Length: 53
Image 1: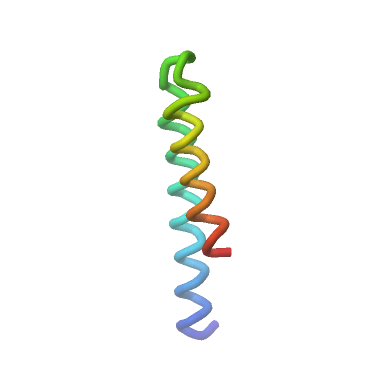
Image 2 (image 1 turned 180 degrees about the vertical axis):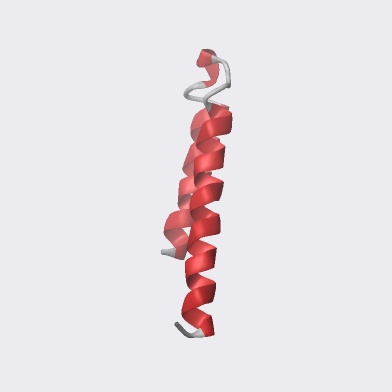
């Protein structure tokens, strides 16, 4: 595996961990925030990951 593909694999792993971390954190938010801040944070986390892909 060359250094470029190794870099991209590591980056994908970090981005995936970031998205999973955001979901784990927002699970503890109050239920009244489900369509407010929670939704915005989750959407932005997925956007970062999908823009890379």
